[in-house]
Each structure stands twice: as C-alpha cells, then as structure tokens.
Image 1 (cartoon, rainbow, N blue to C red):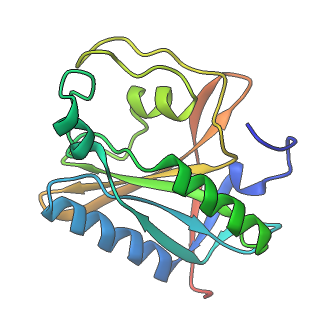
Image 2 (cartoon, rainbow, N blue to C red; image 1 turned 90 degrees about the vertical axis):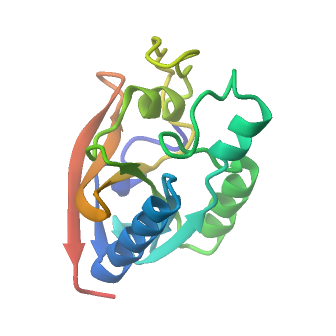
Length: 184
C-alpha cells in the first residue's frame, strides 16, 4: 500500500456527506437497471476521512467478457472492472489538488454489501479465480491507500452499505466505520 501507516486516515474509516452517498446510491440504482455493477470513487479534503465528491467510473467488465469470455467469465452483473490508467491519473491529479481519492465504491446486484473473495483478491493485487467458484490468491495489499465501499441493491432498492479497509496484520479486508454527515 502506498504511504506510511497513519498517513491516510480514511484507510481506517470515512465520513461521507449525505449528498455523496445519495450520488453513490443513484449510480448503484442506475447500474441495477442496466444489469451491471456500478463503480467509482469518492474524494475530499486532505488530512481527514471526509468525502464530499463523487465520480462515476465506467464498468468495463462486460466489454472484457465479450472480447474473451474464457478469461473474463463474469459480466458486469457480477464483476466490476475499470480503466486503471485513467484511475491512476485521477488519483495523481486529486492528490495534487489537495483533494485525494479516499474511497473506491462498487455495487452488488441482488447480493449483500460484503467484500467478496474476488473483490479481496483483485484489490489486494492477488489473483481472482480462474473459473467461477475457483480459489483466489490474496496479494500483498492494495495498490492504492483507499477504503472500499460496497452498496447492495436488491429488487431495485438500496438494501445496505458496507465499508472495508485493508488490515496488514491479518492480510485481509475488514469492516470499517462509515459515517454519514449533513455537512457539504
């Protein structure tokens, strides 16, 4: 993970404005209607865990599946993928502006707000399953100092949210505190 321990307070928990959470929920509902997991990121002022800005990313999983259904056996309904170069550029620009990216989010369709084994393998720089239901290999930890928000959409309605952060001691993603605030 980039940065020294304690350098990124949002890797322990975040405060998200109601407006930003509403934007995440709207994106998750849009994704549900399109039969795809929504994904994007949240950012805010440096120095604390507050997130007051939302940015949607394009889920490229179905495009990858169409190109190579054997390697990319999941569609965007059960997997999210994004242009990592564009995301890395956004991280760099946000840091220069003093408004770092703090949270990556994605939605689950008709499933809970949990960090799946595939999510954990991919976000820890490990290996996702080679086949549906296959084993995953955890990596050394996230490439980016972020928290990870999962929003569950069931039957077209927001069901729950879960926030997860990397715990280097256990080499696993663990639940963290998500606080919703009224400040904008």
